[in-house]
Image 1 (cartoon, one colour):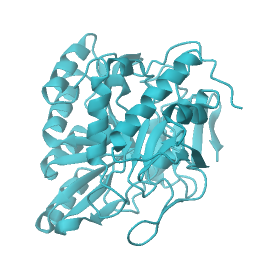
Image 2 (cartoon, one colour):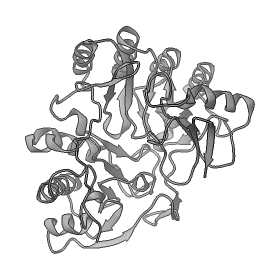
Image 3 (cartoon, one colour):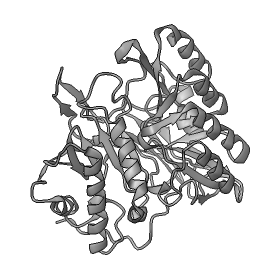
Length: 395
Protein backbone atom coordinates (compact mmCIF):
# COMPACT_ATOMS: atom_id res chain seq x y z
CA UNK A 1 0.00 0.00 0.00
CA UNK A 2 1.32 3.41 -0.94
CA UNK A 3 1.11 6.07 1.75
CA UNK A 4 -0.62 9.33 1.06
CA UNK A 5 1.52 12.39 0.55
CA UNK A 6 2.41 14.41 3.62
CA UNK A 7 2.64 17.73 1.77
CA UNK A 8 1.96 20.54 4.21
CA UNK A 9 1.54 23.44 1.76
CA UNK A 10 -0.48 24.11 -1.39
CA UNK A 11 1.36 23.91 -4.67
CA UNK A 12 2.42 27.25 -6.08
CA UNK A 13 2.49 26.51 -9.79
CA UNK A 14 2.38 29.83 -11.61
CA UNK A 15 -0.35 30.84 -13.98
CA UNK A 16 -0.99 33.82 -16.20
CA UNK A 17 -3.03 35.53 -13.46
CA UNK A 18 -1.34 34.11 -10.36
CA UNK A 19 2.31 34.65 -11.26
CA UNK A 20 5.37 33.43 -9.37
CA UNK A 21 7.83 35.91 -7.91
CA UNK A 22 11.15 34.68 -9.33
CA UNK A 23 14.55 36.27 -8.85
CA UNK A 24 14.30 38.06 -12.20
CA UNK A 25 10.70 39.25 -11.76
CA UNK A 26 7.24 37.79 -12.25
CA UNK A 27 6.96 34.40 -13.95
CA UNK A 28 3.74 33.68 -15.85
CA UNK A 29 2.81 30.29 -17.28
CA UNK A 30 0.36 30.21 -20.18
CA UNK A 31 -1.46 26.88 -20.53
CA UNK A 32 -1.85 25.50 -24.04
CA UNK A 33 -4.16 22.45 -23.95
CA UNK A 34 -2.71 19.92 -26.35
CA UNK A 35 0.10 22.40 -27.10
CA UNK A 36 -1.94 24.12 -29.81
CA UNK A 37 -1.33 27.82 -30.39
CA UNK A 38 -2.78 29.81 -33.29
CA UNK A 39 -0.42 32.14 -35.12
CA UNK A 40 -2.48 35.20 -34.19
CA UNK A 41 -2.26 34.26 -30.51
CA UNK A 42 1.46 33.57 -30.86
CA UNK A 43 1.93 37.05 -32.34
CA UNK A 44 0.15 38.61 -29.34
CA UNK A 45 2.12 36.48 -26.88
CA UNK A 46 5.51 37.36 -28.38
CA UNK A 47 4.63 41.06 -28.37
CA UNK A 48 3.49 40.85 -24.75
CA UNK A 49 6.82 39.28 -23.77
CA UNK A 50 8.68 42.07 -25.55
CA UNK A 51 6.62 44.81 -23.94
CA UNK A 52 6.21 43.42 -20.42
CA UNK A 53 9.14 41.14 -19.55
CA UNK A 54 11.92 39.00 -21.02
CA UNK A 55 11.47 38.96 -24.82
CA UNK A 56 12.21 35.22 -25.07
CA UNK A 57 9.33 32.76 -24.65
CA UNK A 58 10.17 29.75 -22.51
CA UNK A 59 8.83 26.30 -23.47
CA UNK A 60 8.00 23.93 -20.61
CA UNK A 61 8.11 20.16 -20.19
CA UNK A 62 4.29 20.12 -20.27
CA UNK A 63 3.96 21.85 -23.62
CA UNK A 64 3.14 25.26 -22.18
CA UNK A 65 4.82 28.67 -22.56
CA UNK A 66 6.25 30.92 -19.87
CA UNK A 67 6.95 34.64 -19.84
CA UNK A 68 9.72 35.65 -17.43
CA UNK A 69 10.93 38.87 -15.81
CA UNK A 70 7.53 40.56 -15.70
CA UNK A 71 7.61 43.98 -14.09
CA UNK A 72 5.45 44.51 -10.97
CA UNK A 73 1.81 44.67 -11.99
CA UNK A 74 2.49 43.64 -15.61
CA UNK A 75 0.52 40.43 -15.12
CA UNK A 76 -2.70 42.48 -15.32
CA UNK A 77 -1.86 43.71 -18.80
CA UNK A 78 -0.61 40.25 -19.80
CA UNK A 79 -3.89 38.63 -18.72
CA UNK A 80 -5.89 41.21 -20.69
CA UNK A 81 -3.89 40.52 -23.86
CA UNK A 82 -4.20 36.75 -23.43
CA UNK A 83 -7.94 37.00 -22.87
CA UNK A 84 -8.30 38.94 -26.09
CA UNK A 85 -6.98 36.02 -28.15
CA UNK A 86 -8.66 33.19 -26.26
CA UNK A 87 -5.65 32.04 -24.23
CA UNK A 88 -7.33 32.72 -20.90
CA UNK A 89 -10.88 31.31 -21.10
CA UNK A 90 -11.22 31.06 -17.31
CA UNK A 91 -9.45 33.14 -14.66
CA UNK A 92 -10.44 30.61 -12.01
CA UNK A 93 -9.29 27.48 -13.87
CA UNK A 94 -6.23 28.74 -15.73
CA UNK A 95 -3.69 26.93 -13.51
CA UNK A 96 -5.39 23.53 -13.87
CA UNK A 97 -5.66 23.35 -17.69
CA UNK A 98 -2.66 21.02 -17.89
CA UNK A 99 -3.46 18.82 -20.89
CA UNK A 100 -0.81 17.09 -23.01
CA UNK A 101 -1.88 15.36 -26.22
CA UNK A 102 -0.22 13.44 -29.04
CA UNK A 103 1.06 16.36 -31.18
CA UNK A 104 0.43 14.83 -34.61
CA UNK A 105 -2.88 13.16 -33.78
CA UNK A 106 -5.37 13.39 -36.62
CA UNK A 107 -2.75 14.57 -39.06
CA UNK A 108 -0.28 11.78 -39.86
CA UNK A 109 -2.71 8.87 -40.15
CA UNK A 110 -1.30 7.08 -37.11
CA UNK A 111 -2.94 6.42 -33.77
CA UNK A 112 -6.34 4.95 -33.01
CA UNK A 113 -8.29 8.23 -32.98
CA UNK A 114 -8.00 11.97 -33.50
CA UNK A 115 -7.71 13.35 -29.97
CA UNK A 116 -8.00 17.04 -30.84
CA UNK A 117 -11.79 17.13 -30.31
CA UNK A 118 -11.32 15.21 -27.04
CA UNK A 119 -8.90 17.82 -25.71
CA UNK A 120 -11.21 20.69 -26.65
CA UNK A 121 -14.25 19.00 -25.10
CA UNK A 122 -12.43 18.09 -21.87
CA UNK A 123 -11.04 21.61 -21.52
CA UNK A 124 -14.53 23.08 -21.92
CA UNK A 125 -15.99 20.68 -19.33
CA UNK A 126 -13.13 21.44 -16.94
CA UNK A 127 -13.61 25.20 -17.14
CA UNK A 128 -17.39 24.86 -16.80
CA UNK A 129 -17.20 23.05 -13.44
CA UNK A 130 -16.49 25.49 -10.57
CA UNK A 131 -15.46 22.65 -8.23
CA UNK A 132 -12.58 21.64 -10.51
CA UNK A 133 -10.86 25.00 -9.97
CA UNK A 134 -9.69 23.39 -6.72
CA UNK A 135 -7.47 20.91 -8.55
CA UNK A 136 -3.75 21.15 -7.73
CA UNK A 137 -1.73 23.04 -10.31
CA UNK A 138 0.44 19.94 -10.76
CA UNK A 139 -2.49 17.75 -11.85
CA UNK A 140 -1.80 16.49 -15.39
CA UNK A 141 -4.03 15.00 -18.08
CA UNK A 142 -2.49 13.04 -20.96
CA UNK A 143 -4.50 12.32 -24.10
CA UNK A 144 -2.64 9.72 -26.16
CA UNK A 145 -4.13 8.60 -29.47
CA UNK A 146 -2.71 5.11 -28.98
CA UNK A 147 0.79 5.61 -30.36
CA UNK A 148 2.28 5.80 -26.85
CA UNK A 149 4.03 9.16 -27.03
CA UNK A 150 2.38 10.99 -24.12
CA UNK A 151 1.14 8.14 -21.91
CA UNK A 152 4.75 7.71 -20.82
CA UNK A 153 4.84 11.28 -19.45
CA UNK A 154 3.07 10.34 -16.25
CA UNK A 155 -0.38 11.86 -16.32
CA UNK A 156 -2.67 11.63 -13.32
CA UNK A 157 -5.59 10.73 -15.55
CA UNK A 158 -5.42 10.13 -19.26
CA UNK A 159 -6.45 8.23 -22.34
CA UNK A 160 -4.39 5.66 -24.20
CA UNK A 161 -6.39 5.07 -27.34
CA UNK A 162 -9.89 4.35 -26.04
CA UNK A 163 -8.84 3.31 -22.54
CA UNK A 164 -8.55 5.38 -19.38
CA UNK A 165 -5.21 5.53 -17.56
CA UNK A 166 -4.76 6.42 -13.89
CA UNK A 167 -1.25 7.48 -12.81
CA UNK A 168 0.15 5.51 -15.76
CA UNK A 169 -1.91 2.40 -15.00
CA UNK A 170 -4.09 1.14 -17.83
CA UNK A 171 -7.72 0.46 -16.90
CA UNK A 172 -10.55 -1.37 -18.58
CA UNK A 173 -12.64 1.82 -18.63
CA UNK A 174 -13.69 3.07 -22.03
CA UNK A 175 -16.74 4.48 -23.72
CA UNK A 176 -18.19 6.54 -26.52
CA UNK A 177 -17.51 9.87 -24.78
CA UNK A 178 -13.81 10.01 -23.85
CA UNK A 179 -13.97 13.63 -22.65
CA UNK A 180 -16.76 12.76 -20.23
CA UNK A 181 -14.77 9.74 -19.00
CA UNK A 182 -11.77 11.98 -18.34
CA UNK A 183 -13.84 14.57 -16.49
CA UNK A 184 -15.44 11.89 -14.31
CA UNK A 185 -11.99 10.53 -13.47
CA UNK A 186 -10.84 14.06 -12.63
CA UNK A 187 -13.77 14.55 -10.28
CA UNK A 188 -13.09 11.15 -8.71
CA UNK A 189 -9.50 12.18 -8.02
CA UNK A 190 -10.64 15.37 -6.33
CA UNK A 191 -13.17 13.46 -4.20
CA UNK A 192 -10.61 10.85 -3.16
CA UNK A 193 -8.05 13.57 -2.45
CA UNK A 194 -10.52 15.33 -0.14
CA UNK A 195 -11.27 12.07 1.68
CA UNK A 196 -7.55 11.50 2.25
CA UNK A 197 -6.87 14.94 3.67
CA UNK A 198 -6.71 17.19 0.61
CA UNK A 199 -2.92 17.71 0.52
CA UNK A 200 -1.77 15.48 -2.36
CA UNK A 201 -0.70 17.17 -5.57
CA UNK A 202 -0.71 14.04 -7.76
CA UNK A 203 -2.82 10.90 -8.01
CA UNK A 204 0.18 8.66 -7.29
CA UNK A 205 0.62 10.40 -3.93
CA UNK A 206 -2.74 9.12 -2.67
CA UNK A 207 -2.93 5.86 -0.76
CA UNK A 208 -3.88 3.26 -3.40
CA UNK A 209 -4.80 6.20 -5.63
CA UNK A 210 -5.42 4.41 -8.96
CA UNK A 211 -7.44 1.61 -7.38
CA UNK A 212 -9.58 3.94 -5.29
CA UNK A 213 -10.27 6.34 -8.14
CA UNK A 214 -11.13 3.38 -10.40
CA UNK A 215 -13.55 2.11 -7.74
CA UNK A 216 -15.28 5.49 -7.69
CA UNK A 217 -15.86 5.15 -11.43
CA UNK A 218 -17.75 1.87 -11.04
CA UNK A 219 -17.27 -1.86 -10.63
CA UNK A 220 -16.57 -2.32 -14.35
CA UNK A 221 -13.43 -0.14 -14.19
CA UNK A 222 -10.51 -2.46 -13.47
CA UNK A 223 -6.76 -1.85 -13.41
CA UNK A 224 -4.24 -3.29 -15.84
CA UNK A 225 -0.55 -2.94 -16.62
CA UNK A 226 1.64 -0.04 -15.55
CA UNK A 227 3.27 2.01 -18.32
CA UNK A 228 6.55 3.61 -17.28
CA UNK A 229 8.50 5.96 -19.52
CA UNK A 230 11.74 4.39 -18.27
CA UNK A 231 10.71 0.91 -19.37
CA UNK A 232 10.06 -0.76 -22.72
CA UNK A 233 8.34 1.14 -25.48
CA UNK A 234 4.57 1.23 -25.43
CA UNK A 235 3.04 -0.87 -28.17
CA UNK A 236 -0.11 -0.01 -30.07
CA UNK A 237 -1.40 -2.50 -32.60
CA UNK A 238 -4.52 -1.10 -34.16
CA UNK A 239 -5.50 -0.79 -37.77
CA UNK A 240 -2.38 -0.71 -39.87
CA UNK A 241 1.17 -1.58 -38.85
CA UNK A 242 2.20 -2.05 -35.23
CA UNK A 243 3.84 1.03 -33.75
CA UNK A 244 6.44 1.07 -31.00
CA UNK A 245 7.23 4.33 -29.26
CA UNK A 246 9.33 5.06 -26.21
CA UNK A 247 7.75 8.17 -24.87
CA UNK A 248 9.49 10.32 -27.47
CA UNK A 249 7.88 13.11 -29.43
CA UNK A 250 7.70 13.65 -33.19
CA UNK A 251 10.97 13.13 -35.01
CA UNK A 252 12.70 16.41 -35.84
CA UNK A 253 12.24 17.22 -39.51
CA UNK A 254 9.40 16.51 -41.91
CA UNK A 255 6.50 14.14 -41.26
CA UNK A 256 4.04 13.39 -44.09
CA UNK A 257 0.43 14.21 -43.30
CA UNK A 258 -2.70 12.88 -44.91
CA UNK A 259 -4.06 14.93 -47.79
CA UNK A 260 -0.67 15.74 -49.31
CA UNK A 261 0.45 18.12 -46.56
CA UNK A 262 3.39 17.81 -44.17
CA UNK A 263 4.41 18.84 -40.66
CA UNK A 264 7.84 20.21 -39.76
CA UNK A 265 9.11 19.59 -36.22
CA UNK A 266 11.88 21.95 -35.12
CA UNK A 267 14.24 21.97 -32.15
CA UNK A 268 14.10 25.10 -30.00
CA UNK A 269 17.60 25.48 -28.47
CA UNK A 270 17.25 25.13 -24.68
CA UNK A 271 13.52 25.67 -25.04
CA UNK A 272 13.94 29.44 -25.47
CA UNK A 273 12.09 31.03 -28.39
CA UNK A 274 13.77 34.29 -29.27
CA UNK A 275 11.81 37.17 -30.77
CA UNK A 276 13.30 36.38 -34.18
CA UNK A 277 12.31 32.72 -33.88
CA UNK A 278 8.75 33.38 -32.76
CA UNK A 279 8.39 35.93 -35.57
CA UNK A 280 9.60 33.31 -38.06
CA UNK A 281 7.03 30.83 -36.72
CA UNK A 282 4.25 33.40 -37.09
CA UNK A 283 5.28 33.93 -40.71
CA UNK A 284 5.88 30.26 -41.54
CA UNK A 285 2.92 28.48 -39.95
CA UNK A 286 -0.24 28.23 -42.09
CA UNK A 287 -2.56 28.43 -39.09
CA UNK A 288 -1.11 27.17 -35.82
CA UNK A 289 1.93 25.70 -34.12
CA UNK A 290 2.02 22.84 -31.63
CA UNK A 291 4.31 23.19 -28.61
CA UNK A 292 5.43 19.74 -27.45
CA UNK A 293 6.52 18.49 -24.02
CA UNK A 294 9.96 17.77 -25.53
CA UNK A 295 10.57 21.50 -26.08
CA UNK A 296 10.16 21.19 -29.80
CA UNK A 297 7.60 22.95 -31.98
CA UNK A 298 5.55 21.38 -34.77
CA UNK A 299 4.47 23.48 -37.76
CA UNK A 300 1.65 21.43 -39.32
CA UNK A 301 -0.36 21.61 -42.56
CA UNK A 302 2.45 22.85 -44.79
CA UNK A 303 1.87 22.42 -48.52
CA UNK A 304 4.46 20.85 -50.79
CA UNK A 305 4.98 24.20 -52.53
CA UNK A 306 5.76 25.95 -49.24
CA UNK A 307 7.94 23.25 -47.67
CA UNK A 308 11.25 24.64 -48.92
CA UNK A 309 10.60 28.29 -47.97
CA UNK A 310 9.22 27.30 -44.54
CA UNK A 311 12.27 25.19 -43.70
CA UNK A 312 14.65 27.88 -44.95
CA UNK A 313 12.92 30.58 -42.90
CA UNK A 314 12.97 28.59 -39.66
CA UNK A 315 16.55 27.41 -40.14
CA UNK A 316 17.71 30.97 -40.74
CA UNK A 317 16.08 31.98 -37.44
CA UNK A 318 18.15 29.40 -35.55
CA UNK A 319 15.57 26.64 -35.13
CA UNK A 320 16.86 23.11 -35.73
CA UNK A 321 15.22 21.26 -38.62
CA UNK A 322 17.79 18.44 -38.84
CA UNK A 323 17.28 15.30 -36.70
CA UNK A 324 21.04 15.33 -36.13
CA UNK A 325 20.96 18.82 -34.59
CA UNK A 326 23.32 19.02 -31.59
CA UNK A 327 20.51 20.76 -29.70
CA UNK A 328 18.19 17.76 -29.90
CA UNK A 329 17.66 16.31 -26.43
CA UNK A 330 19.55 19.11 -24.63
CA UNK A 331 17.49 20.95 -22.01
CA UNK A 332 18.09 23.04 -18.92
CA UNK A 333 16.23 24.61 -16.03
CA UNK A 334 16.19 28.40 -15.68
CA UNK A 335 19.34 28.57 -13.56
CA UNK A 336 20.96 31.87 -12.69
CA UNK A 337 20.03 34.71 -12.72
CA UNK A 338 16.32 33.84 -12.93
CA UNK A 339 16.32 31.35 -10.05
CA UNK A 340 17.63 32.36 -6.63
CA UNK A 341 18.28 28.73 -5.66
CA UNK A 342 20.45 27.90 -8.67
CA UNK A 343 24.17 27.41 -8.17
CA UNK A 344 25.15 28.14 -11.78
CA UNK A 345 24.08 29.77 -15.04
CA UNK A 346 23.13 26.37 -16.43
CA UNK A 347 21.83 27.65 -19.74
CA UNK A 348 25.11 29.37 -20.52
CA UNK A 349 27.03 26.26 -19.50
CA UNK A 350 24.78 23.98 -21.57
CA UNK A 351 25.14 26.28 -24.58
CA UNK A 352 28.92 26.27 -24.21
CA UNK A 353 28.93 22.45 -24.08
CA UNK A 354 26.83 22.17 -27.22
CA UNK A 355 28.97 24.65 -29.11
CA UNK A 356 32.14 22.85 -27.98
CA UNK A 357 30.72 19.44 -28.87
CA UNK A 358 31.21 18.08 -25.34
CA UNK A 359 27.63 17.05 -24.50
CA UNK A 360 27.99 13.61 -22.86
CA UNK A 361 26.50 10.37 -24.20
CA UNK A 362 23.64 9.52 -26.51
CA UNK A 363 20.80 10.00 -24.02
CA UNK A 364 18.93 13.27 -23.50
CA UNK A 365 20.94 15.61 -21.28
CA UNK A 366 19.37 18.01 -18.78
CA UNK A 367 21.30 20.74 -16.91
CA UNK A 368 19.92 21.68 -13.50
CA UNK A 369 21.01 24.38 -11.08
CA UNK A 370 20.07 22.65 -7.84
CA UNK A 371 18.68 19.43 -6.40
CA UNK A 372 15.07 20.44 -7.08
CA UNK A 373 15.73 19.28 -10.67
CA UNK A 374 13.12 21.53 -12.30
CA UNK A 375 12.03 20.65 -15.83
CA UNK A 376 13.70 17.22 -15.90
CA UNK A 377 12.52 15.06 -18.81
CA UNK A 378 10.75 11.78 -18.23
CA UNK A 379 12.59 8.55 -18.86
CA UNK A 380 16.31 7.85 -18.94
CA UNK A 381 18.57 10.87 -19.34
CA UNK A 382 21.91 12.26 -18.23
CA UNK A 383 21.70 14.93 -15.57
CA UNK A 384 24.27 17.69 -15.21
CA UNK A 385 23.71 18.79 -11.60
CA UNK A 386 25.30 22.06 -10.51
CA UNK A 387 27.01 21.91 -7.13
CA UNK A 388 29.28 24.27 -5.18
CA UNK A 389 32.24 22.39 -6.71
CA UNK A 390 31.11 22.22 -10.33
CA UNK A 391 28.84 19.79 -12.12
CA UNK A 392 27.99 16.28 -10.96
CA UNK A 393 27.13 13.95 -13.87
CA UNK A 394 24.23 11.66 -12.95
CA UNK A 395 23.02 8.98 -15.37
